Image 1: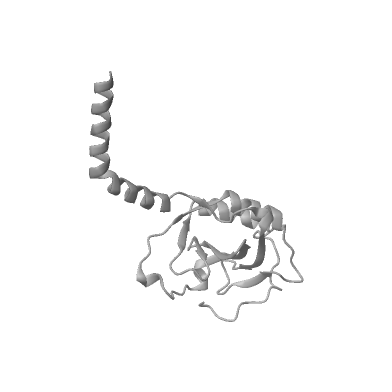
Image 2: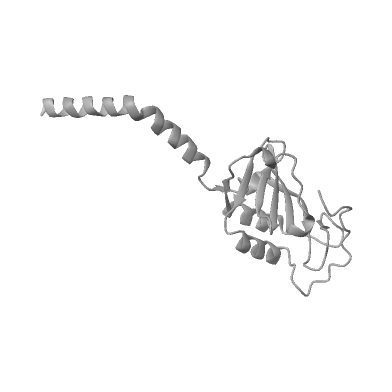
Length: 172
């Protein structure tokens, strides 16, 4: 029995010495692509601003903070905590990119602990960590996240949001 165990141990050492580094590298790469919540602990997070763009609008409009609209921060943060994103593969073309606002229906800017995050929902479904070079995440189930966020914000086709101030530019 001891000889069998020592042979198994020797075989395991041989495999680990030959393949160990590769296995560790593959595990580190896989770790990058594990889905993560859009925001961490909702109790330590805060919604800084929300911008909205209706289908008929060319640019985003300031939805929150705004004297004519209020939001349920706790419920929105809960949704963002329960929603996930996976890390995008970084390519240099991502640096300094701009998006037409028409590709974004909802932009949520969040303070999440020490991080500031921008969440884009619509044609573009992306989470970015502000000030972090190349940290972009693709939001999973983005359509349902957008629908639920609009419901939490009480934004529907019948809502009169004509009083919302537009953002100055159609690119940012």
